[in-house]
Figure (cartoon, helix red, strand yellow):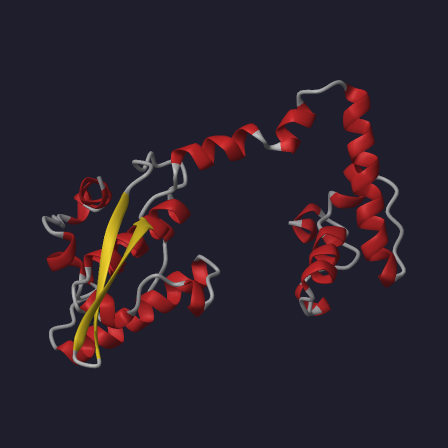
Length: 225
């Protein structure tokens, strides 16, 4: 599925992938794929012939991927060395993450899992441990999440319940931006220019917001955008 997806995406560039392990380890295909999917311009050479240059190229590419996907280093299921070593498991995790981020509607086959066997030498003896690792999400979990989505249910309910939710959300917003001396009374009108939304995110996540990066009192549609 992933091979066909890459070939379909890069068809106009006349790139054909036959083996995920053999064709992706040097970063060339990943480079083209990210530029095509995310309109990203990567500051690396298109073709890296030596292992050292390939390592540097992969380092830049994977750094951009982690930034786009907003992943911490501890959350990554791949590395420069594992991709360079043609590790299929790492390559699959990386491609699935890229596909889910840039093409979320892509119908990835669910419930794909592999059994990994780790072999260690301890005190002259071989010790093995088995574990099941999911490559794509468990379909039952996805369906359960979609069935239990409280917000979806609320929007299909009668207007009285929706008004109650709006009131609760309003209190939630007011509680947090109130610390900045702001008062929110109407979700539709006061959220339309983006200012309250930015300040709310800043309060919730502890982000530093440089006030010079946006208009606190936007006077035009362009300033709101």
